[in-house]
Length: 177
Ligand SMILES: [Zn+2]
Image 1 (cartoon, rainbow, N blue to C red):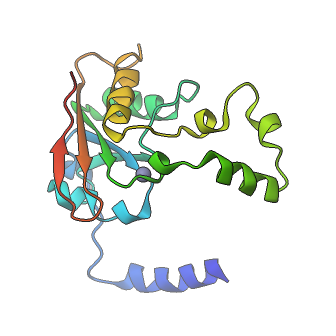
Image 2: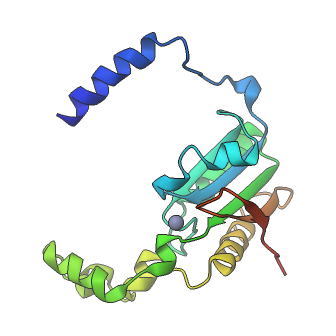
């Protein structure tokens, strides 16, 4: 059973001297939003030179703020208000699955699961509902604009865009103009 295996490993973790539990003093008032892609797990923060607990990390499919979703926005707003966030970085990545979204394949898989895609997504196209990405840089800019447009997030919060190379961990800036 999955949970039993996890609990077994957890006993070792709790007893381990090597575990690192961050404290609030480590926090650098910086936030990150990046993709849920597991290849980025354990890579992004070290690639940026951040230790565990130094930054707020938000993740979702394609590092996005979709029009009807306030989850990322409320999380940033909370971090600004209660953790004194000063800077927030939206980080795209090369080879993002959301940039390779295949509408036909997704419809087929939904139908195999017994879902009627048209009924489920209402007036939205399937690619729009899932947040398919055309261009990873433009997607970072769109996310930043959505954060900037949120009236509950202070204009004093500095927003930045970057892309990480999924294979090498190399970072580059995204031009905001
Ligand atoms: Zn991705």
